[in-house]
Image (tube, one colour):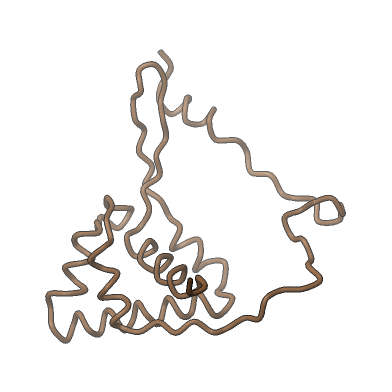
Amino acid sequence: DRPVIEVLEEKHPEMQMPDLTDRTTTCFEEYEEVPAVLPLQVVSEDVEKLSNKLSGSAGPSSQDAAHLTDMLTRHGKASYELREEISAWAEWMGNTFPPYAAYRALLTRRLVALDKQPGVRPVGIGEALYRMIAKLVLTKARPDT
């Protein structure tokens, strides 16, 4: 019976940096042709529509999906302004190349260790705001079928 922290450390390998001088490294492949980039347009109504489909537990900010949905839909002008801000964030994430610190902040997770008897399963719970922004970008970027 080892301490949980030791089990989690064993499951999490050390970070590795890719060798960018190696031509076989596929993390930054170059392509001869890429599809045309069309700017994403996200509006307040998109955020409101998606907020009712959001689910999930609270991440590091302690804000779960139900709380975010409440803030986006039940507070009149303040909710509208928050929806406008989230749509601007979604456009920023989908149309530009934000600094790495922005990705790090949005991708922060709350780590929970589940006792699976035998063993431990690490589970990372992300921010509801990030899930909202990611779903907005993916919804707007997918081709109409």
